[in-house]
Length: 337
Image (tube, rainbow, N blue to C red; front, side, top):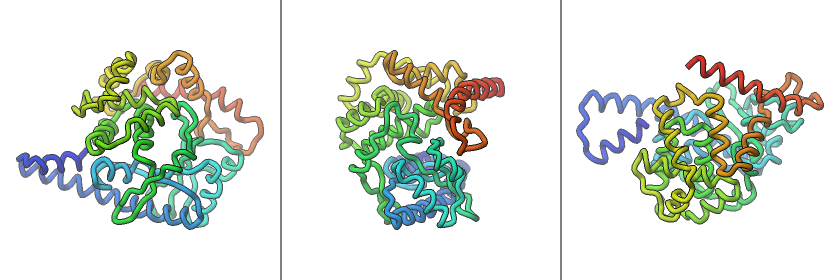
């Protein structure tokens, strides 16, 4: 939020004292310096994948910073996320490894078609983290990601004078709504992203947003995102979305619940039962909520994998062990906080 605070104080010519101005300038400098190597790595990976003829788009991170705030360093991000087709993951991984990147996910797991939360890479001698996502890793989408439809609508965002492939604005809006819900909207920055997109793009095609949200089962997630932006950052909801939010009686109670844990910024995370109830309610309907919660509870990630990724018949065991691991993890987390 540092860059946004500084920009708005300057824009409105608000006197804020020399000490605050120096603190903001210093924090902004740190943020700019932190984003520079990430953006350089984004350019590098974009060129590598393009040369290999692997279709990929950048999501969130610098693309979202430019779209929402007009500056690739205006918001914090600690990695660069690329979205590509699952069918291209193995070749993309081999290509990045050949270019000097070290993978966090072993090749054996990729060959076994195991699905991690993301495919992480770091180039030797750097600290910049690259994450590859596919329609399979985006498990918090309630329904399968229509990856081909997304790629048919690819847009370009200019960063430092270079066009970077990105999702269509409407598809990105749905993605960040689901991402916020995935993390229980624990950070004001994510709500600020939503508010900024609504404010900066009055021409956004809300019919397309509704269509994409309905396709992936994220209608309530989008409504909750908009209500949070309105209640906390005073951004009016577009009329057509307002009608849907008002008609969905489950949205406002969820938003009020989020407001109770937002001040702790993730330092006091929801307990296990709260997390499960939140996932259940975000789908909007009883059976949909049950299916969504069950799938998330039983879909193993790299934290659940056995030590032998190529071993046969491990998926069932990993799936059945996952709920016990999650219960232990979040019970311990609750005690620590």
